[in-house]
Amino acid sequence: MRAPLRSAVRSLLVAAACSLPAARSAAQTVALPTPPSSQLDRVMAAQYIAPPPTTWEPYAPQAGQLPPANIMPAAPQTGTWAPSALSGQPGYPGYSTAAPSLVPPVSPAAYPPPPGTPGSVIPPGGVMANPTMQQTMRVFQGVRGSWAYIYGTGNGTSVGVNELDTTATFALPFFYHSQANLNHAPLLITPGFGLQLWDGPETSATMLADLPPSTYDVFLDAAWNPQFTPLFGAELGVRVGIYTNWDVLVWESWRIMGRAVGTLQLTPTMQGKAGIVYLDRNQVKLLPVVGMTWVPNANARYDILFPTPKAAWRLSEMPNRSLWGFVAGEYGGGAWTFRRSTGQISPFDYNDIRITLGGELVPRTPQGLSGTFEVGYVFYRQLFYVDGPPQIQNLPDSWMLRLGLAY
Image 1: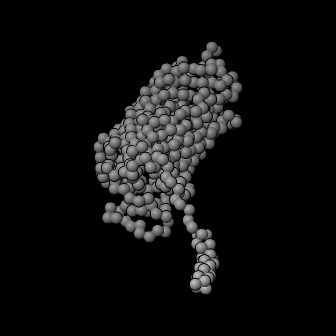
Image 2 (image 1 turned 120 degrees about the horizontal axis):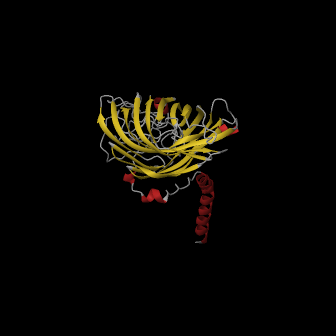
Image 3 (image 1 turned 90 degrees about the horizontal axis):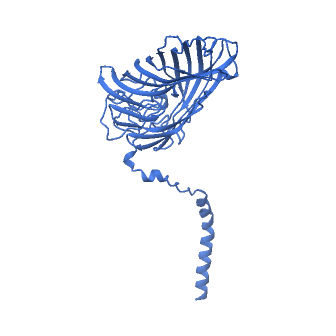
């Protein structure tokens, strides 16, 4: 009995020794377990998350969209359902009042596959399903321009202002394949130029609240609006420029502005936002950004957001465009350097608060000519002179007219 037992034990040892290399090789290829999702991802029900629709284009001008909901009514495949094509980038207070457009609420589809993935087809409506980067990439995003007039007689402290602004936006691939850029958001580069024509205030021996006849802005803007997860995203931007009048260029003429806003998808129709906007003015450096965007249906959008609230409603449909009406608020103004009547070079701020009522024609296709018209009330107007006197000059309330075009 001992010989058979000894033989069996020897056979088991030989078999175990022979299996060691295979076991060691298998241990080198074992994959780590998938990390658990975040607490919010587990709490939020799956039906609250909806991927972009088939007409969603990551390189379209509307780069900061909310994912639509499955429950929303269907819209035409080529429709645009919320302003604004005139939004600019990244929409600092005083330079842009319109929030980024939302995507049309059509049937949802998967996110676009990586470049080279077969199966991207054009449906009967002519809109590409699951487009690749080469099929959706448009370097030139569009051009916009606006003119605003704030009434003033030029007498005493009744200051009138003409504001002209023009920008062009270009898109570049940026972390296109990154797992932290689910919407394939591009880097948006926007050069721009602005001109302000000032009328008043009067300068006398007892009141030195003078202004130059004109000031200008020359800037370069970069913005990125990624979606990190189906719940969390961001709106990031930085702007560098020169802000002065024609005969002064000093260190104080350079300004750096920026914004960092986090977004949280609360429901299919509601997105919360919180962050900061850095204005780099002499009197006001920072403003908080807090609030939410609510899109209850395809005909309304509410940006319950400080410092740029806006409510917009679709009023009518035309063959090629939609007519939207809106009520909006903004913190206007800016900062520049100039040479005072005494010869001293000084920075100054112009600040105001604007409430406007307007209408906008939005094209029903991704590309097309759009326009906006606004009438507004302007109050809390102030001139702030870094090297007074006077340090602060209060201006009377006024009204504003603004026109804009974009393509």
